[in-house]
Image (tube, rainbow, N blue to C red; front, side):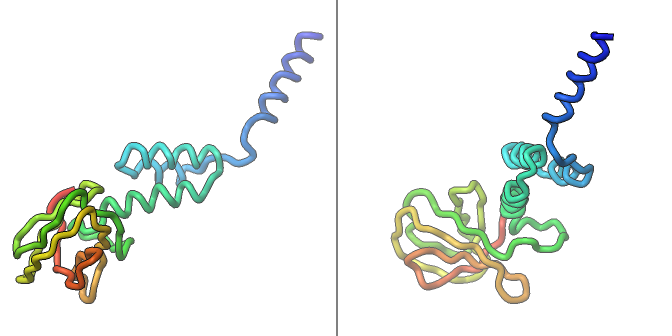
Length: 150
């Protein structure tokens, strides 16, 4: 009899230590769909911790990573901000520009610019009719670009 009471007490204590909320299958599916390992882990951690802002941050990171890719889906993000590592001495038509976040963008209009900037902040934003433009800190012109890889 004493063993049963002890077992019941142990189980009760374990139940009290469990989180007050349960992780829903929808939350798990949302986390499972994230490709980036660190963002996916943050999503799972947030699900267990009940930290919804972390889930949203992980989803935002995933959306930004997919920005500009041709996938036929609805655009979730209208712009992202990052920088160009090193020196940019302008651009020519067809030039590829690698960003600090690993994305590579190709200039697709006929614009040219000769201006030297070091480690400039950049904003890639969606313009009218779905065109995407690269705004570079310190340069007033913004070339039209397309994403050519991850």
